[in-house]
Amino acid sequence: MSYDQIEVPADGEKITVDEETGELSVPDNPIIPIIHGDGIGTDVGPAAQKVLDAAAEATGRSVSWMRVYAGASARDKYDENLPVDTVSAIRDHRVAIKGPLTTPVGAGFRSLNVALRKKLDLYANVRPTYHLDGVPSPVKNPAAMDMVTFRENTEDVYAGIEWEAGTDEVQKVKEFVEEEMGHDDVIHDGPVGIGIKPITEFGTKRLVREAIEYAIENDRDSVTLVHKGNIMKFTEGAFRDWGYELAEEEFGDVTITEDELWEEYDGEKPEDKIVVKDRIADNMLQQLLTRTADYDVIATMNLNGDYMSDAAGAQIGGLGIAPGANFGEGLCLAEPVHGSAPKYAGEDKVNPTAMILSGRLMFEYMGWKDAGKLIRDAVEKTISEGDVTYDLHRQIEGGNKLATSEYAEKVVENIHELA
Ligand code: NAP
Image (tube, rainbow, N blue to C red; front, side, top):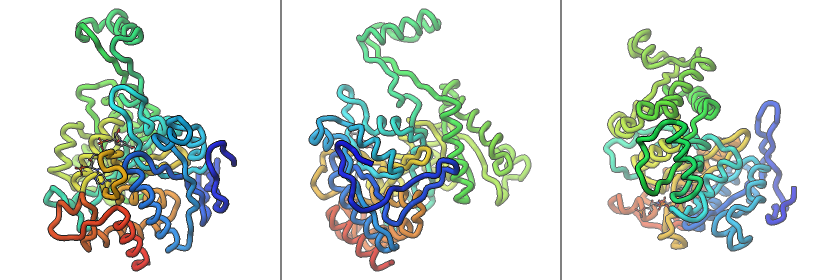
């Protein structure tokens, strides 16, 4: 495989996928593309790489990193935001990890994160939120949170179908909505921007399928469909209906609804069943705080999922801790939940845990569960011994305030100790 712009590492082998079974074949020395990213990406990227290398080596493997570029680093090198080679390299190598990429608000280019997810059809953004011992939290019982959010990644108001105020296009859409569709009393006079919110049966069902399969494989108790279907009946309401339909059609033998739980089992969940329930999004945001332990696997649309997983992340220590990964057919692109926090860029200050734990998700997808567990245990040991970056240090009494790179070194030391 050769690329015009990217250097392929001399050693290392490609991860491949069996086209028929969809199973990954992972060598002990895979080539993994990595985008360090913008802003604090230049701090957390190299720090995470060191920790992932240590965990791979401690379990008898090695990673051949392949640096690929997007955002500011790609503009510097190639004068473009998202080179074709970057997208091809991720697609060809099946598994990759990225740091955050900056998106200008209002004017300027569209989100490169959204573009990458769309180009690679990475339809499920998975964000686990669980509490690590020693991590300070603003809530009384952070350990009650052990949730995995499946956020649909390709549809919703994020799809990028929108028109700017003052353009001919927006005028055309306005006239269509008013004159042909009869909504002539909704849009106020004067400049207007208009966006479209597509939610398809296909997009909904493949996301909910992933969430239920994950719940089955990981012995989870429930899958909650989060929507605002009381107001947006034909988009978010349809998401709820298609979600239940999928559960019944494809997983009818292992799932029950909340009504069935009460009517047939008197509220006592049978061990071999998963409860599929739904919650309205605004209620869900407060239930995350008041009834945290009732929620397990969440399946939701793009915008709800973005809000919810940041809020859930705050309960278990904040954005410095919260990992994520995007999945498509035979593809995984791991990335932390946080953004590029430009004010801290290059200061060797921020917390690399979110990027490190995103790497853990990537290793688990590759079947490297032992390396993943080692990473989690080493991060937990580091934090519970009081070795933390500024964000956690300001929330605890005592402790050692470490730079990004020093913290990563501590985690590596703990990997060696625990291995
Ligand atoms: P942000 O970069 O996530 O930063 C918001 C705040 O969260 C920071 O000021 C900091 O809070 C805390 N934080 C974030 N990462 C941290 C870390 N690793 N360690 C410790 N604290 C951390 O959000 P933003 O300021 O809204 O967005 C900045 C840019 O990132 C925007 O261009 C946005 O579009 C982009 N973004 C990219 C992605 C992505 O690449 N997937 C995701 C979200 C946002 P304190 O200052 O309180 O310490």
